[in-house]
Each structure stands twice: as C-alpha cells, then as structure tokens.
Amino acid sequence: MPRKQIAAAFALLLVTCATAGSQPATATADSVSDRCVLMPLYVGGLPVLTCHPRVRVGPQLDPLPVTTYAAGTVVPVSGNAIVAGQQVAIDGQWSPILAAADGSLGFILPREARAGTDVARLGAGQPPLPLAAAFPQRLVVRPSVARATFSGDKVEVMIEPAAEAGQNVTVDLRATDGSPVSIHVPITPDEATSDLSVPLPAAFPSGTYLAGVTVDGVGSLPRTDPAGADGPQVRINGVDGSAAGESRITP
Image (cartoon, helix red, strand yellow):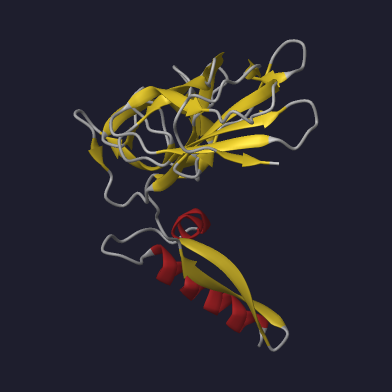
C-alpha cells in the first residue's frame, strides 16, 4: 500500500474513532487514545492502525484474601475504581472502605461475620446501596480457637466467631509429641455458641494436644507463641471416660 494511502487511512481512522458516539470531538491523537485502543494490522507487510473501542468498567472488587476472624481485623481490598468511602456488605452488614497511612485500602470485618464462606458486595452512598454493575466476591473467614481446657472427661473449646445454629462444626485434637493420635468430634449447634464441649473416651491417651476447629469446611490455623510453639494446646491426663458423646479417634 502506498504511503499516501496509509496516511489517508490513518487520518480517516482518527476522525472515525474520535467522533464515535453522540458528541462530536476534535480528531487528535489524545482523543483517539482515550476512546480507542490502537493496534497495528499488517496489510501487505505494512502496519495499518485499527481502532478497538475502549470498554468502560465501573468499580469492581478484586478477589478477597482468606481472613482469620479477630476483632478489628482489616480485610485488604483492591480493584478497578475502588476508593475510600465506598462500602462492603457482608451478610447484610455494611463496612466502609478506609485508607491506611501507606495508601492501602481495606474494610473492618464486621463483628457479626460468620466463619465459613460468605459473599462480599460493593456499595456506595448514604445509606449505602449495592452497586448493580459490581460483581460480588467470595469472602472466606477462618474461625479461631481462643482457648482449650481439659476437665476430667472432656475438653472445653472456645471459638471465635460463635458458631451459628445449623453450621457444620468439627473440633480436632492432635497430639504434639509426634504420635499420630488425634480426635475429631462433629458438632451441629442448635443455637449460636462460642463454647464447644468435646467428650473424650476412656481409652484416650494422655498427652498434650493442639486444638483446632473447622466450620462449614473452613479450618482454623495454629497460633504461634513467642517460644515458637503452635497453639492453643491442651494437656489431657487421666480421662475417666464418663462423658457421653460422639468422638472418633484416629490412630
């Protein structure tokens, strides 16, 4: 293609791209780059620029990180056109997006958030309303074990957040001495509770165990204390076996 024809085609391209839409515009390189993505198309070995209209995308949340529940936990957020002042809804509870000193963005996990997998929706305004064009994102919240104590024939485990009625909960006790002994106790609460009771069979070996909990398929992570040991741990000794309940021992 002769150079004069290429120049004429490019000039026509500028006019076509810049004036696309209902409002006329001056055909400049800047206006074209704002409206189009210019990509070369090779014709007869020579490059001819083609216009691919830009797609305008509204605010959108990027996928959210897995978060361990704790009071005041900040969930980092990012995404297209995400700014401080927008809001994120978790199970109907709105939490504003805040800017940290380093410029990063995040929202405080609502105290009412449940362990397991939930849906996060982006919103704006006062009162906040969901942005219809924003895709929801999955939010995975890990439960945590606040403490575990042994009492004669059972282990009492306190978890955060409280398990709600109907959630599938499993408490795990795993030996820390290198032996493969562990116990797994499924629990389905009839009402919201943070306190779980794990009955122990008479044959349960004495020792130190690491306590963990799984809620609706999402498991807690061990905490590491200043000495480097995983926790929370519970010392079991002298089980009398009088407690009733369903327990499964894995040798």
